[in-house]
Image (tube, rainbow, N blue to C red; front, side, top):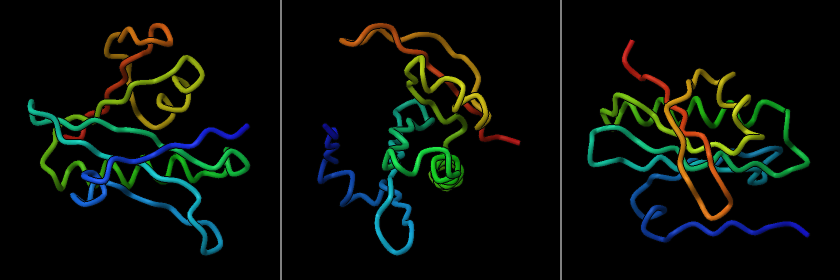
Length: 115
């Protein structure tokens, strides 16, 4: 059974959602959420499962990193499941702690946006 992800309307209205298409159809999205500390949270990327390992996730992360720099964020922060930690590491994120969730401990990963 495929899980459905719903986006808060205010994130869409604020222009914080980046969508990627594949052959003209929506294939995934990511959300960049500004934080009070001047950094930004990365929510996603979410890609259609049959399109995993096609480069679309990495493309969304790069778009999100660029967008976060436009928002003047210095660091992009992602909350990663154990399965997604290697993906984030390949996208330039490094370990930054842990976060306890209802699904168990998750890794916090960060990527500097200042070069």
